[in-house]
Image (cartoon, rainbow, N blue to C red; front, side, top):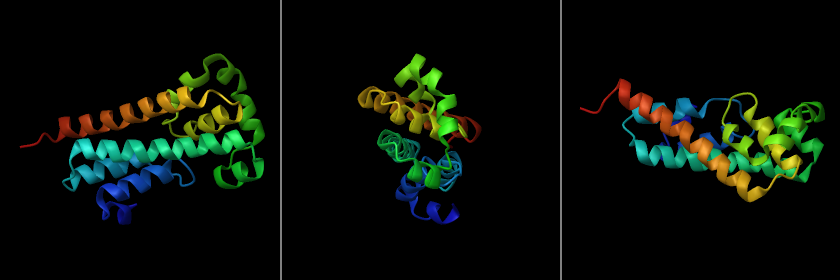
Length: 149
């Protein structure tokens, strides 16, 4: 993670993308670290959001393809895990994409939304909104604790 910070906003983008796909770590830490290092909040939010959103949509796409070999290999998600979320996905559909930023269950939700063929446009929109809200929240918390002088 520390190496990614050296690459500034593009490192944040890459780290946020990977955090939403195959590497289990917190992109929130990268965002805050970049702010601590002197990065500007608005570009940091944009790069983190787009990276994490594209990572989430990658998970959605792999779910849509339904290739269990890939899903189990790269995400460690079993058919049973996806099946547990079937009722929620049927009830809430693309609205669940607002929560794909949540640790632990977010990746499973993104894959499940794809697997159950939930509307891609609505899913993409709600996922973008949820992920952006997450990074705005972290930037606001950071700026509240460490106000610019």
